[in-house]
Length: 303
Image 1 (cartoon, rainbow, N blue to C red):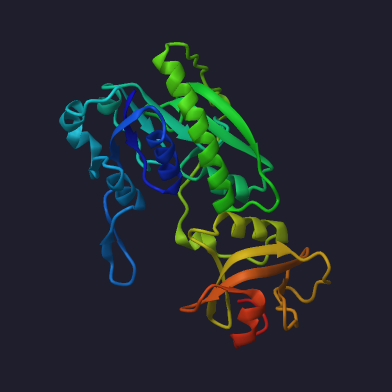
Image 2: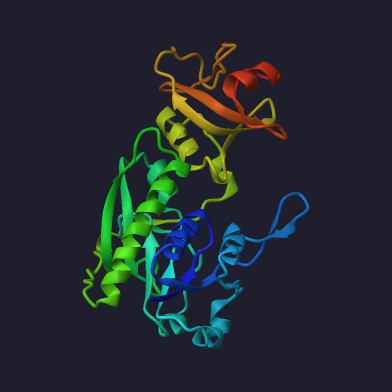
């Protein structure tokens, strides 16, 4: 089949790679426009742009899809495939071809932009992938295929995204074969059971040490790539990339940084939060022991 692919971040790139390695032909990639990045706010293309061009695939970065319906009509393809594209496709576009979506949750649970982060934030031990028909509504189309995946205690966003994108690619290829052979089946979602998740803002990464320690660890797991969990101590902002619950240490005073030369420990109301990998403002990402060796605390209590 000739596929026009819609997707932008790493999850989409993994799915695209699987399509390029399959017997199907990707005739184009539609992704988000370049965005300002870094201190100089220079425009930066999504990584999928260079990946697609490296494989000789045309790239389209339309700001508003509804303004380019005629352009889409002129693209020779059999089907649209979306995976973490980031925008809702307009009805005029969906009327042109069948469109199917790779969504990393067990729909109707976690419809929306952040299903992987939400599963980790909520401490779920089970997630999965749904291949569904893309409709104008938010992830509410009929389901072609769905498969579960266990979330391990050591999983964070990076590892879980890798597993889900790999699983989603396998499932997508199966569904494409079924569509091509006209052997597919579709099951409507139970809309009454739907839950929705929203985009994550930078400030959502703030660690509130009034929360339970497991919730703090889950936030670190969910945000290890972006926006990265953080807190303040003595006015200094510290990003946390990896953490765990320290079960072998007794609690101190609330929000106290416990005295330890090798381990970065913060006392919470129901346990001890241990930072394993972190970064100071303008510094490098370091293991806790290396960070403690060079960082000078202005206070011993978290702001």
